[in-house]
Length: 129
Image 1: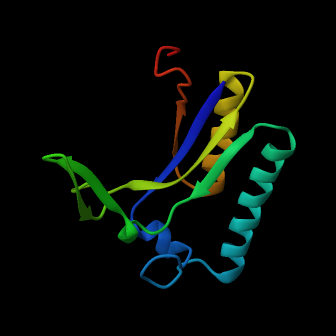
Image 2: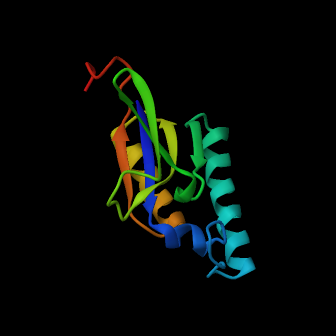
């Protein structure tokens, strides 16, 4: 069973790590420990075959929305308007049970120090939900 673990944040989430437009609010040691813990977590999942993929996303100031208007793509800067939280990163896991997915999402939540969203991944156009 595949699940996506998603973490969300506002602009301060990137600033915390010095990845946004502001100065890092964590110390260099805290940032290094955070990235080490994330690497260890993903490394463990890769080693036991539960990791499909995972990425942190760039600062939301680099986001673009795209839609089709009159058959042509139209772009605008930024994530969807009026959002306080945006997708900060995600991981896709392939586990044997829902309980294992919840266990891993809880560990990920502890690593990123905020709540995360856990959602099953549909592999058949939604018909398996």
